Image (cartoon, rainbow, N blue to C red; front, side, top):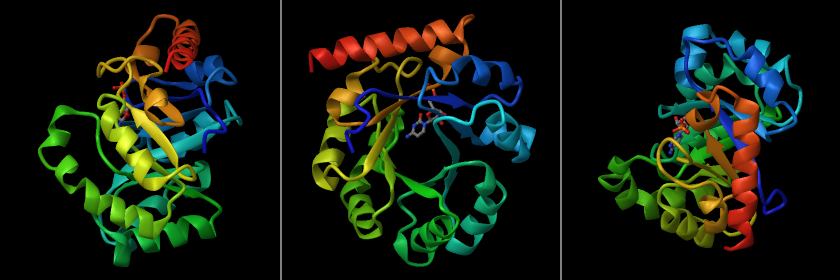
Length: 223
Ligand code: C5P
């Protein structure tokens, strides 16, 4: 990867508000949108199509955080697959009968699979980080388009980049509300930083997004 050294994706999670205006304001300013499970469950999968009609640019990701057998993950994904470019699933379910089937399904529809390698919250140290070598084995075998790695713990993101090499896209949440500074994950090897509340909860999301971009640029200059 590395083709987009300053990637910024905005996380839309809350089911309690309409994001149509925000998507229009941020279209062309950011590199994509990640739609969370609360939003997709609350508003319905068709809301992804409604939002996308407001911005045809960038990458659109359904963050379903799937963790099931392949058959069920495909059923869940089929509800939204026509409206997004990529879907997120957990890595710990393994390849056979699970992620392998999901990847095949997504690729048959021209879509990308993104696999969670680790998470950004403190509890990720309790289980997720201990399982990381095994999860990375599965990811290496699978060969997904992208992986999720935490901005809050850049050393984990760096180790994932070192292990998986340059070809996989790393998307990294945890910037802003969860404490990571813009640009920290990019310096650690990520391609895209995912920012939710810092931008979405701002009274002026467009200015907030531009400020994140500027902070990314400054941080990258001193990596
Ligand atoms: O609002 P905030 O910037 O904390 O949003 C972070 C987004 O990234 C949320 O949508 C959350 O579900 C997601 N995420 C995360 N950690 C992961 C994977 C996804 O925080 N490992």
